[in-house]
Image (cartoon, rainbow, N blue to C red; front, side):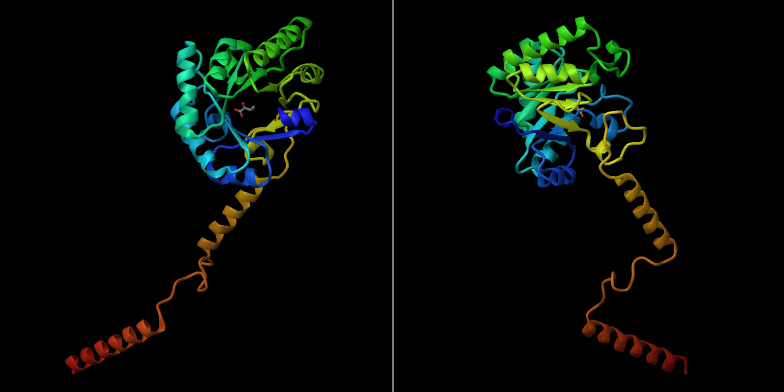
Amino acid sequence: AEMKRQGKPISALTAYDYSTSRLADEAGIDLILVGDSLAMVVLGHENTLSVTVDEMLHHTRAVHRAVRRALVVADMPFGSYHGTVPEGLANAIRFVKEAGAEAVKIEGPRIELVRALTEAEIPVVGHLGLTPQSIHRMGGYRVQARTAETVLQLKADAHALADAGAGALVLEGVPREVAAAITAELPVPTIGIGAGPDCDGQILVFHDLLNLTFAPAAKFVRRYADAGALIRSAIEHYREDVEHRAFPSDEESYHLPETVRRVLDSTHAATQKTGTLRKA
Ligand code: KIV
């Protein structure tokens, strides 16, 4: 909120484990989201729906152990807040208490739940627009809010979430103009993904940013490095070295201390001599 007041853009990135979160934190990222996108990019599921609370907790703990500076936000997975408000609240408490999350993210205009979480001192990040947990209702991953009616609805939902206490709002897959208008109207920061450059911050999926995915990138993704090619080539190089006995080298091997070597050499020489004498 302070960054929005100061007009400073917020950098956000997803991460799911110790080493990559540590790198993101050391690179100065402001907000790390343990996104339920881990279902797809880490666990290989077709969509985000099947990841469980226990899996999300496991990854949130790893991120929490790595991060010193960034705000750690845990994504509440599908089904963990779609029942009653007390159920959603109980699951959110687990992310804070058992895994070290400093805020939770929930998709959709779940106003009562946001109010309850806020009253329970749990900061909430809302998520509107293209909400991947609604894939079946949306009929696919489609850009949202393209008609006057849906734009007005999105704006109303954004205001309702902020009024209920949401501390920030992810806007995903919406036209730039809509995100810009909501950003200008809302007192809390908006963080865009596929929502144009006018949001208060931007978020990308770690694997998209580094080309660690196996499908063509969406229009809004910018690849900042080809880590996929780098990793594949390093592993191929390693395999070739093993196949050609070029790895490990003598320098990469442990050696016996000289004194032990001498003792073993003399024992060996003595054994050889005894053997020769016996034969004779
Ligand atoms: O799970 C995720 O990675 C997300 C971001 C795309 C915002 O929700």
